[in-house]
Length: 368
Image 1 (tube, rainbow, N blue to C red):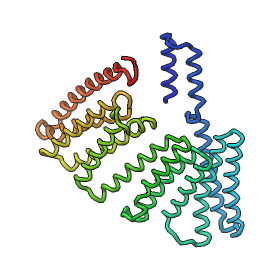
Image 2: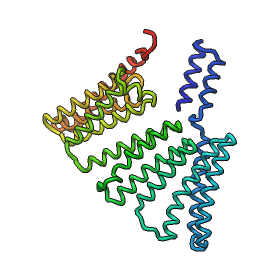
Image 3: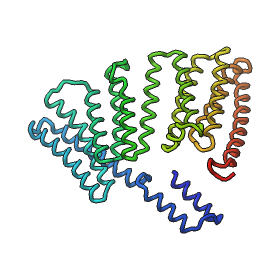
Image 4: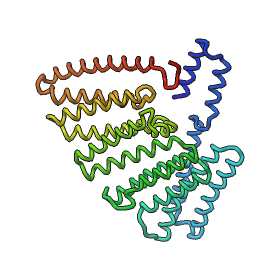
């Protein structure tokens, strides 16, 4: 998606004489040379690795009883070593993407090996422990091989650990396991810095947001929702304020920190709207929601498209919700739809004006 926009922008700049065709070609070639650049071939290679891993595990499982016990153990160990050595060899030969595919097959096979060996020797233990071991080995392999693919794999395994815990403990709180999203997030953040797999931050943030939602299920009170809204907006403001030290640090990781901080705030405001659906409480929450949307646009509307659109959606949803709960009963369904249409038209006008304002405003650091 970004490459398409970049190519179109370069073509416009060439047509306007801002840059020459050779410079545009060099810029596009430099972008294509980055390892993080999206490639259909790379995606298909990773999918092939996943499918091959699944086929091997299913083949072993289908013939498990027919394979001698010693052969099973040796075969699993050989399989794990073979995939990892093949990955190391491919990386050493200058084929990192092929190496990543082999490493992924080795990591997937390790998960299957845990299950098969536990079944073979009737080992007692909890499923969440097995998932934690799998996640730990994936993280260790990612660090040793400095693999972005394995870092992403470890990120998804961190979700699997938490979901396994929730299923095994019926969503109850249980000491150490309850903190696994936090611990996994710290490990993944360190791996992201070490391996350069910046996209794993989305996995970290989503996992933390799900964890916060799970905490809310224990205390479905306005106090917790208010805490989410206040902490989310405070963090968002600290990230969005240009003079904030936190802003200097987080901007190196892109637009994600500000967006997910705002998501937490919106989640808290949404829960407060459920708690207070009439009277002065509704009015206060509505004002706070609109104010949060305006603040988000003021701080990040120019440069952060994700925050901008979320602020638009939040603002529009709050106005429509207010229309529904306060006016629908008085004017009837047809009057509600008419008023909603007028509100949406006004919102559209406001959004168009703000988009023009953002486009006209010079970026930070540019000449005024």
